Length: 460
Image (cartoon, rainbow, N blue to C red):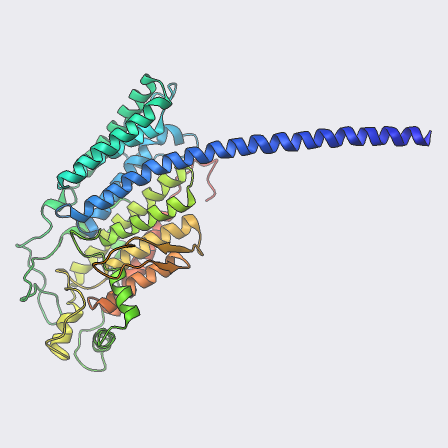
């Protein structure tokens, strides 16, 4: 009897063991197959998105009139258009930002029909390029046509002709709708065609910014603070009041101008590298200071290969943070109209002193680089974590300046180095950088707080 029970137990145990082994093997196979398929789809979607964003970056380097705030606004609208274009795919879990936050009426897609999201996105990006980069060189215009045709040829094989045509048309229509929304903001729309205002008269007085006699460039985008933001109430993000202007050695202005002078006499090799690494103020050579953070975002997406919903959310949030950050920053710049360190140093310390790079033709406080960097870094930190290690290859291989890649332990590290590089460059006081960081982080937190998930999927 005992032997019988033993044999039965062993046979039963063996059967269950074989069954469990079979379940685990099959489950692992199915999981791997599913994961492999998902990963392949992620790679394809990210490849399309990143190739378009790389073209946008290359184009802004040379497109006439593209400066930091203008480029930021463009990326905000491109990110919005792409996110809304993908809504037929995302609608089960996500909400439309344009309809829920901006009260826009957008094209709708018949959800009873199949939807090819990459065909729609390819069409959307092509239309946004045509609409927003009117001053692009012929070369970039041709590259845009080639990129669109390349993906069209690849994507046509993924669906039937009706699905492809419907999806593509939806992408075009959504992009047109977002562009029409952009056009209702008269100050921001096509601002690249008139970036200087010779008629604008800045506030005058001791310590206030004025057009340089040596390089008499008119004020750059003096009305940008009145451009329509995506999320923020601009007046809520006004920079903190400045201390009383003074040339006394006990004043903050004296101390911080002396810092700019001292670190440049001469700049250490490391500080010169940092200054040039983050400058991004060379039209015709580099992208803009806001575009720099799109370059960083491209690298993160390439490294992580997230699913399409997270990729589109990333570019939506980063674009809006850059755009709203630029509006807030320029509002404060012309509100306070603070002169640049170069002007102070010439009056108080050394009339022959020169910064490493020429002083931009607009007020000093707060720093635009600092705002762009902290706004984008806050969004990226919320999406990818506080201890994200990354080597920034944005200027790898450049020989016009020190663009050798630098490694960082977090997006915040990048934001702080980017901000204080402006001191080394000689174009900002420390107070400009610190206040710019504060405003940018606040903007980034505001953008990050927006819940794009439907209530049943939201974690907020």
